Image 1 (cartoon, rainbow, N blue to C red):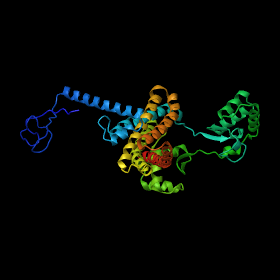
Image 2: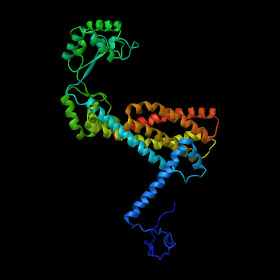
Image 3: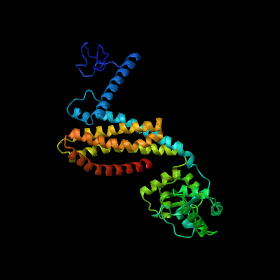
Image 4: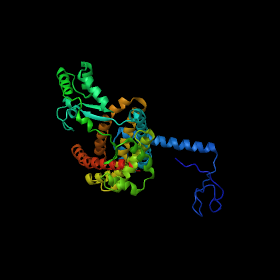
Length: 404
């Protein structure tokens, strides 16, 4: 598509006389194009450019869906005019994907905000097994062991009243307690629960060991709500030396990482939806940057595995196209989950990931032109380091996003 130029009789840079056919000044080389244009011409040019991009985008998506790997083959063969350039295509699609991901996180935070509201009193949890005077058990093979049923409480008196009521509780009350723990409501389980409740002494010593715990990070904890709130108020003015002293006083090492975690967790309020959104967006932004690292790393894996193509940039183009198509698929699922039906969207994630894996294998087969056996084997070969590296980078991105 030819560019629309609005020519001048003289060069705007060096005042050299220009002919009507001169697109560039023969004296200084500046383009003969005046930027003083009417608004209607500007709007027309924007529309033409957008339609031109829209056509290329449609051709790119259509070729990607109908023939996996085709746009990479065409690009490497020089057939590029009909498609959006790989990097531009990736930036456009990834922007939409991470925008939708941010929208989903905001929706989830707003939905669950009422369930994480601030409570004036700390909430505790204790199992029937502990109330009977036994040691705390973190794992048990028998999932139907009624002794592992836990009670949430805010005061000893409220828990004592609840247990006393359940000891003489009705069948419906016991069944409700069993169902909350995903235990079958059989007569046998019901009787075992009633016997376990009767074995709890009226004044259980386990309750005396439960103390308020206002934790910030690691061993940095406060025994009262007043101390905790005072710390949250003053952390904004703490110096590094003050934070280090707090860490050392609570048997934590005064490292840079621990210092940053105390500062961030001290300032961050998980009960504040704005804090949650700000943190989530920072993490999403950090994760988006890791993808720019993953694409060249993936190209290295492809170069190492599919060495028949010896030039690195050939594998890099394939990597960019594949990651872009994955984002297209994930963006469709996010759109369904956010704007159409959340439950259907959640159920579609499994099929979306499966589709991505199948698409990748077919693209590898078409692009590198090897047998199905070799293609699948090499796919498995590159998948292990890919998922390992991506997992590590994602964890680092989450930590960096939180600290930032």
